[in-house]
Amino acid sequence: MTQNQGQILVVDDNRLNRIKLAHGLEQQGHIVALAKNGQQALDMLRQQSFDLVLLDIVMPEMNGYQVLEHVKGDEALRDIPVIVISALDEMESVVRCIEMGAEDYLAKPFDPVLLRARIGASLEKKRLRDQEQAYLEELRTERERSERLLLNILPKPIADRLKQGEGIIADSFEEVTVLFADLVGFTPLSAPMSPTALVFLLNGIFSTFDRMTEQYGVEKIKTIGDAYMVVGGVPTPRPDHAEAIAEMALDMQSTLDQFRVDGDKPLHMRIGIHTGPVVAGVIGTVKFSYDLWGDTVTTASRMESHGLSDHIQVTSATYERLRDKYRFERRGVIEVKGKGKMTTYFLVGRKGS
Image 1 (spheres, one colour):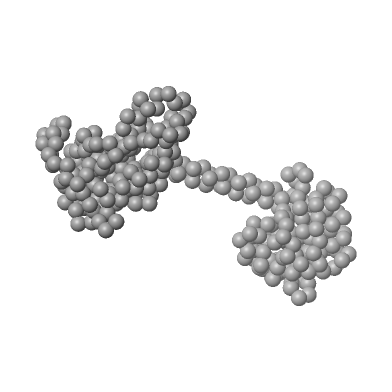
Image 2 (image 1 turned 180 degrees about the vertical axis):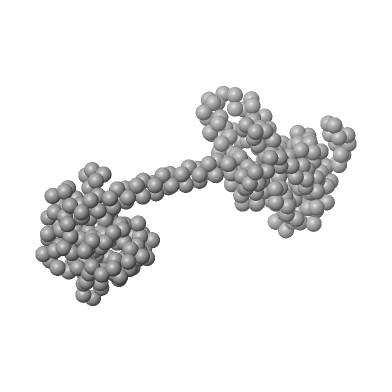
């Protein structure tokens, strides 16, 4: 079927009129369906696709005006062009149909050449409308894909601000809780693995952690090799940021046991947590990222690097905020690079568990 041909529904209560119209249209290459009344026409329009409707006005039970009203009031049908062909040639009827959304109006008896021209014009308009809708749908799909990619890089509130034209985003937060996690001895353990198997393993671990960030309402900042960084209370402040990070840390620790290297070698992890102020913002214009800065970030990183395997080490600041709800073991005073002597604690579990 060429672009000048289409599927046309002829609606007329007069059998001879239907047959005559159908014969002429089929000779022009159109595919034609016939309806003898308004209700049958509506049923057919909802069951199959048509490019054009040729509609009579004077019909019993449901006249053409009512059919036209139903078609143009139905979101799924309103874009189908309707040409009214009627013995009613009063201007009032013509105006009424056009105002209701009819594409055109021809009075009986009609000129076949004129009808052919009107049908061709209507089908071309329909084709252009369909093409436009296809382009708009494709554009919407691409926009959604771009939105998903952007949200894989940035938190939604930050992405929204960038889309609104903010050039520099740098926010201060008085108190957040930062977590660093690192797989202990992972480099020598993974050395015999193929690159594909290595990436597959890390993807499985970090994807599990990613799902936890959604579960606990915290923000993943980045992965660096086999290290993972997450923060609670950014970019949307929340009073229970320390609790959310503690819950995730305990969950990360218990979940790691399901992963193995070479099928039987267990993995071990250090986790470090600190609570304090940070600056958060977007850096770069190419491959940009959302990141944190400040001494709180450094201290949380030190808690991880100076921690023990299979332990969650926290600072006094985090301990004070969690001591009433969680169980801790006091590690004592340790020497921390760049920080001096610090009293630290190991998060063991929830109180009452």
